[in-house]
Image (spheres, rainbow, N blue to C red):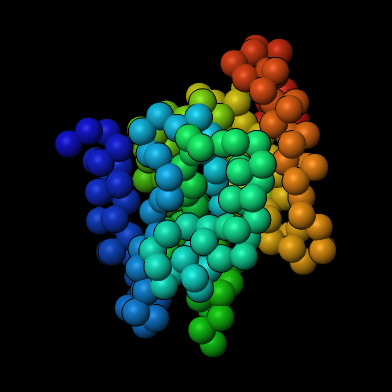
Length: 191
């Protein structure tokens, strides 16, 4: 078993023993681990948590936000990527609606998601939204990739505001590509 398989296996095991797993059982859902190439991708995109579509299928970013992210990547011919979330389980409120994950939930899964990211060994990490950025600010992954971390608003933000966000995505990658691996790169705290 290689490092990626071990990281995935560990994340699945711990998720099945977490109280949030009840959400999977209640909704006849699935754990959501990743989409794309987990073995040395050029880009790793990290989002917050699975939504309804993702929970149903077991794959991150396949709903409206995922389609927008796919359009961004397609426009810039990004084909070597992986997408993960700070949580592998849909967070539900008492009425069954999706809620923002708690800090405790994110902190619980942090070491396992960190291990997955480290095993994947991406060249660049792109935070999709503020929750992902907060996750990485407190993550040990930040220290290893700080020169290669970027931030963009979550695709849902652009959808809610009637924008496609492609200009922002292009600007982020244009600014980052010239600096990937450069020690002069702004660090995560400056985003």
